[in-house]
Image (cartoon, rainbow, N blue to C red):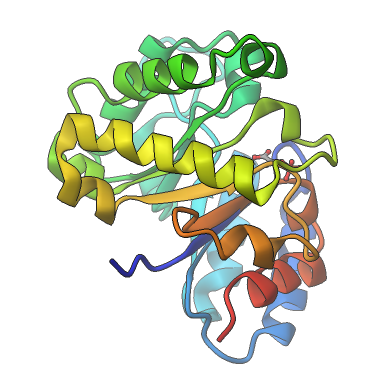
Length: 255
Ligand code: PEP
């Protein structure tokens, strides 16, 4: 089944509003043609209005937030609600990134609550999962991935799944320069798809796009993206530079 690739930049806590405008200017200069993929930029909250403004002239690039609150509104100091994200024209939200899990203590239950809240306002989900090196070495890869998927997606409907991309990101490959081999990544992606099939059925699983994330660079994008179950990439460090993000797209998704 054809699945349109989706490549997303995750800027993490890098770039402010003015660097955001510079990035988009430089990115537009490179991309005169439309990409044969969905392109998403996940910027810090504060940059989203500037990004929205800059992307007005750019066809085919959408905005994501890197997180959202699981609550509607009220006394939650420092949080950003899904309704606020919609007001600044955000279309996607990354939920469950390993940095949110490990540094900010987000559990599968919190991630599940955030995903449900985001779907209430129609946000599309980029749902991150992945194992640590210790878990992989202890033979727990499948157990970790399946519980992240089952608990993370609990209560989400088939329609919600239609608006969900799973990002498989082995924690040991994030920001380390160590990439999973194409074989390791393909194996994990096929397993993720089989878990989705066991919950939602084979057809839904075949439609589901699964991104790989973890030290994706211009020189490894093509090999990873050529794997049958890899439908895109979530890119951290290498997405901060417009040329490098552009090269990943160009190499990973030949026109
Ligand atoms: C990420 O943060 O989602 C990520 C994959 O980072 P990097 O590309 O830097 O490994």
